[in-house]
Amino acid sequence: MLATTECIHLLDHTDELAKMIIDSEQMVNYIENKRKLKQNKEAQALIKQFEIKKEQYEDVQRFGRYHPDFSQITKEMRMVKREVDMHEAVAQFKVAERDLQALLDDISEKIAHSISKQIIVPRDGALFTDSGCGCGSGGGCGCKAS
Image (tube, rainbow, N blue to C red; front, side, top):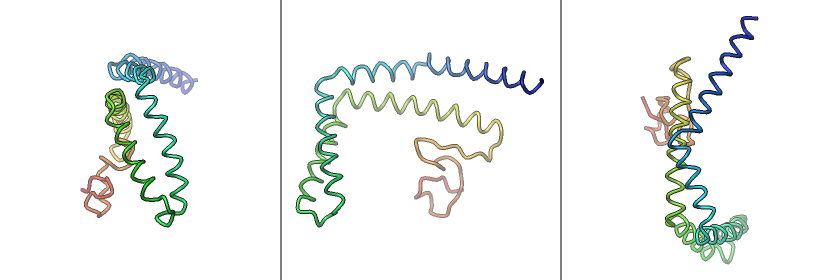
């Protein structure tokens, strides 16, 4: 019975935390920038162009530099990607996305470290970013060498 009551309290706190995240400035900013990106016809056209070029690039990658169009497709892919990344709506969305991810990373880290400082928490999409694992590569792998 005690375990069931504790689980109910834990789930209630989880719901409260989820609501706080949903109501956060980072989440509101993320949703707004996502809406703006989806409504921006120029950005959507660039994204579509990028997706087409990406398919061509993936086809060429199967053969690598031996494919006759390897250099041309690779160059075009980089140019289109840069154009997409430089578009204001895309850039604003990516900033909002990073801000939201940072919030979620901070929350995950606080929860994990409240249990044990030894728990490894992935940050910014990379495992060991702030873990202090000391793999011996001098931090080259993305870990913080201790």
